[in-house]
Length: 303
Image 1: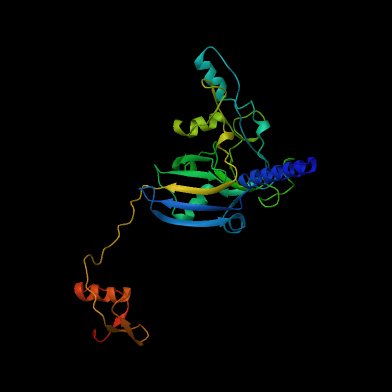
Image 2: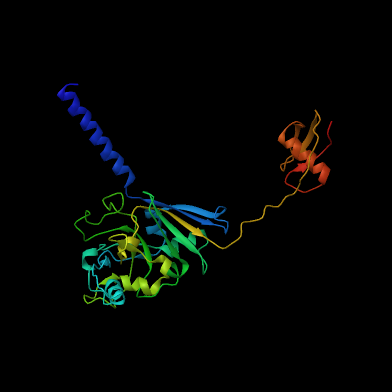
C-alpha cells in the first residue's frame, strides 16, 4: 500500500470514529414517556413529546438568567470514618459547587411530564434513560414530594450563560448535553447564595438506595449530585403498582367452518355476502355457537 493510500485509509477510519462517537452522544430533542403495570411489561399508557411541544404546552421552569448548580465529589479523607463521611457529604455545601455550574437553564418539571401518562403514586419509581444507555432511578417522593431545599427535577432543554454552549441554546442549536436533568434547588445552604443542589441536600431528600457516589477506588466512594444529572435524556419509564388489565374472553372453544357464505349487514344498512372460510366467518360461527354480542348488524343465514 502506498503512503498516500495509507493516509486516506487512516482519514476514513478517523472520520468514521468521530461520526460513531457523535451518534452515540448526540443531544436529544424528544423523550418517550411510558407507564408500566406492576408486571413491569404491560404498557398502561405512553406518549412521545419534543422540547418545542413541552415549551409551548407545559409550565416552563427557569428564567434563562438564574444559574443552577450541582455539587461534585468532596475529596477529603480522614482516619475517623464518621468525620470522613461528614466531610464528604459536606453539610455546609461549600466545596466543588461553583465548579459545577449547569448554566442558566430552562426546562420542564419531571412530574408534569409524568402526568401526561397518568403520573405516579407513592411508593412507585421511575427510570430516566439516556440515548447512550446510562440510566438513573428515582422515587415518587423525589419526583412529586420534593422539598424547596431539594427542588424539582427538571428536564432542561435550554441553556445560556456558559462558554461550553452557544448563547441561548436548545438541544438542536448547541445545547450538546441536552436534554438534561437538573435539580432546581434553593439558595438556603451554600455560602454564595446560589441555587445549588448539594450532596447533603440529596442525603436528606432521598433514601439510601438512590444516593450516588463517585468511586475513587474500590474502597473509597464520594457522594456527588453531578452523577444524577443524566444527559441526552431519551426515555422516562414509570413503574407503577397498578395491575395489568385483565383481558375479557368472550369466546373460548373450537368452531367448525364449512364451505359457503353468509349475509352480513353493516351499520349503514348495506348487505354483504361473506365467505365462511374467512376470519369473519370464524367470528360468525363463534357468535352463532355462543351467542355473545359484538359490533355489526347481521341478517339472513348461512347457505
